[in-house]
Every structure is written in C-alpha cells, then in structure tokens.
Image (cartoon, rainbow, N blue to C red; front, side, top):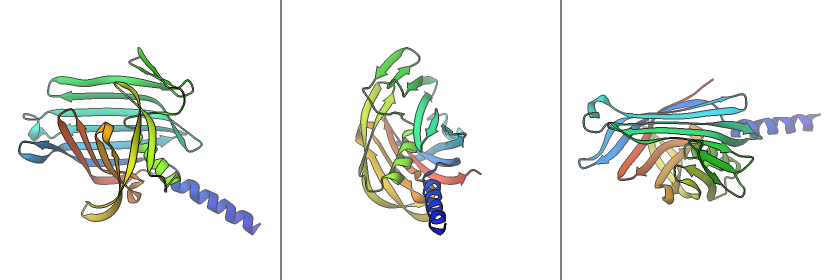
Length: 232
C-alpha cells in the first residue's frame, strides 16, 4: 500500500510540473532606430487553459508618444486542444499594422488528422506526417517539450505561416543570465535563424519567454518581460 501511494505521488508530481497553466505576461517593446534601440511600446501575452483546450493571444502596440513617428500594432491568436500532454493546434490569426497600412491580415486553420493547413479558407498546404505548429503557439510547444526532453538540443517543428509550412529547427544555444524586474535569473537561449528569431525562456516563469528578439523585414523588435502573473 505504501509503495502504491508513493507511485501515485510521483505520478501526480510529474504531471503537475509539466502541465500548462494560465498566465498573463506584460513586456516592454523595443525597436532599433537610427537613434539606437528605443522603448516604443508594450506587449501582452495571455494564455488561458480550460477543459483540455488552450487559447493563446498576444497584443503589441506603440505608446501614444511614439505614434506620430512610429505607429505599430500586432494582434495574434492561437488555439487548440491538449490531449495526453500534447498540444494540437487548430486555428491561428494575425493582424499587423504599420501606420495606416495593413502589413498582415490572415487566418490559418489546421487539420492535424489530415496533416494539412489552409490559408483564409483557400490555399491549402499538406505534409506527409507530423504536427503543424503556428508561429505563436511555438512558444507553448517548446515550453512543454523542453521539460519532457531536458537533454535534447534541437527541436524541430512544421511551422505554418503566410508562405506555407516549413520545417524549422530551434536550437538550444546555451544558458544566459539576464535581468528581469531587477532580478538576475538563469535562462535558456533558443535560436531559429530561418525565422530570424531568438528568445530566452526560464523555469521561474513556466518556461515561457522572458526575452524575445525578432526581425520582420527591415524592422528589429525586442520584447523584455516586466510582469508575469499566473492565473488561478
């Protein structure tokens, strides 16, 4: 009986460690300009986990002070199911604006059982096998997988975006100590050259990003965590 109880406790602990939980995270948004790297706005990431499903969203906007010089906004949403501790994405959309111009506005539906995805219910991309991950939920997938496979150095995913589905490699680039809210924390640095993306995750923050560096076209952005709150 005692051995059985110990086994149950170990099983419960392992599930608790790896299970996703709802949270909100606020970031400072920086961009590289002719004047140097400046804080121009804010971003908010929010994850809601309910009834074996997840809803993950991000909103980034420039501050009112900067809108006359650099008016930027970005809204993303991704959701899907959680089955056997695996994320199964089903939908993604994005709206991105620079000034009065819409630079991105599309939605992607993912059909995991048939291994294909569609863009705006028209264009269809298909793979032979494997899981399809959108560009936002990739953070959730890596957060889960790096806990399951702590010795793994390269994580490969079929990432779907505006131009189709591409197999992308996310490489563990080592540990890095960075400052978050005036606190020095240890992070894991992850790079994906093809997506022009570098981000740091931390165990202290549910293995979610505390620093994100992304280049879109000629624009370079950086998000640095300023507030993280787990939801009950």
